[in-house]
Amino acid sequence: MNALNLLSGGAANGLVNRTQPRFQALTGLSIQGTFSAVGQMKESLLAGTPCDLIILSDALIADLMAAGRLEPGSARPLGVVKTGVCVPQGQAAVDVSDEAALARTLAAAQAIYFPDPVKATAGIHFMKVLQRLGLDQTMASRLRVFPNGQTAMATMARDAQAGQQGLVGCTQVTEILNTPGVSLCGMLPPGFELLTVYTAAVVRGAPGAAAARQLIELLTDADNAPVRQACGFD
Image 1: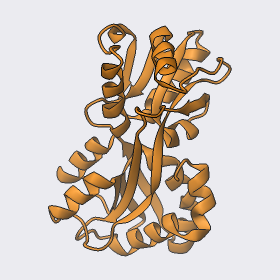
Image 2 (image 1 turned 180 degrees about the vertical axis):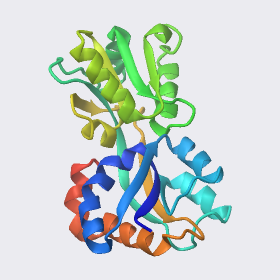
Image 3 (image 1 turned 90 degrees about the horizontal axis):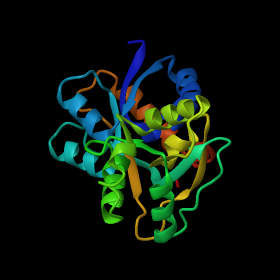
Image 4 (image 1 turned 90 degrees about the vertical axis):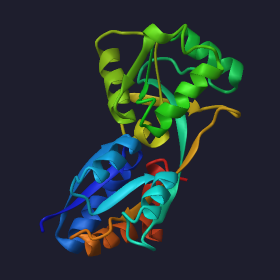
């Protein structure tokens, strides 16, 4: 075994990448990670994709644990992640301080970038935000949907570099902070906020179970707290 197989929601991408050197020094193993919408990662596990460790929203981890797919007692929370709004670097910051400001900002956007509204935690929530604001239909032609938040943010950054203006993105703050070329403007305002607990757990019967437990310890230990905070985990 040369690598630990990991399936994870995109929110944990930056945290895992920044913890990987400690893990490799401890175990001699690399991390073979796939990061995307939590719903897609759950489906991948159930479809038989090789996986030793999985990181998903707490609710999905609970579902998989109840179904007997995860090692009992192995689940450990990484922290709480908020959902933020961002723009390409160099573009003026937008106001999302309250409901009225959020509505004005989104209605004025030339394009809005966000993750899958069916399988991604932030995408599901943001579509509900658009519906509550009455913008899901009027802005339909300007919505830009991607498999996960980091892909959405990276595409927004590239489109801005190509000359497009008035672009706005919304996803988990961890994915915003982990994507070059975008600037965080603020969190979704009161009444629209989303706070998601992300949890890691060992897959039941995984060949790399021992290494998976070691990675969970590194991700969650006190020495890694500054890294978690820098990556957007509260």
